[in-house]
Image (cartoon, rainbow, N blue to C red; front, top):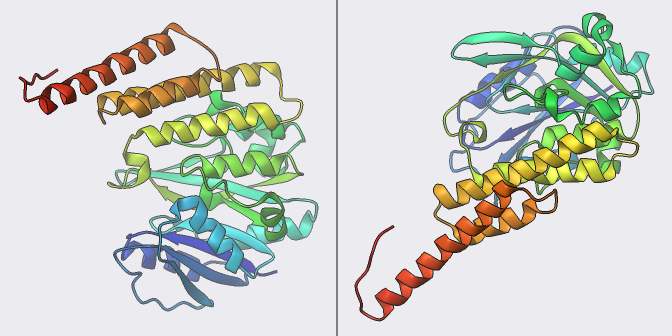
Length: 330
């Protein structure tokens, strides 16, 4: 069974060689191809040799992470597709156990494993929070997850320390036909896109868990999207939360309430960043208005008034300057 590993690359330079090397040194029986997607990088991927077939696909315009992965999926030839960011690396025995699980459980649409979260040189092994919380026996030995996981994966209260509720990007392996059927990653998301695709897959069929380390997620690299807070991050979260609460059939009410609250909060945090860090009251107002889709709060009303006042000051200052009058600061 051929496994296509899609690596997304954007100016990571020599880190890509480390990622490819972690695939080359896989233990156990495996049949692999590597598809590197160069997402309009300024720094070209370094020349690489691999024991596996390796292709580099370049996009001349930035597709961002979801679009880049979808491009890799379209070029993948394997029955199974796994993912790896260029600045992360696979554990030594990552591919073979997932392939074996699919062979033993042909009904499984997706299989995932554990993640080593590395920060400041320290690696901590993490089991997906939803599996630890609801299925402790499966967390110890692995196996097929019960059908209720399609709801539990939406439990935003389990999201902690930058880890999504289910599998990290490099920890999941998915049947290619499933990715094609659901349309791949949501290209309007560049944050939480890996969580979102797992929520959608969970609505289509069974998911399995292999109780073994899958990859090393190197958190905190300067310049990576996870180290920079920006309004678009929060708006991505708001979009995902709104989608789940509206489309997941039979979602328990406490999850719907929590998703609505997180959607509201995320949109308002985006508004706050637009206003305080970007000085952009127009986009701040749009974010506040978006928060009203999830509910109305005093925080939202205050944010809207603040944005309107700020925009009024900017307009007034522009008018004064245009008329040659005195200017002021605020």
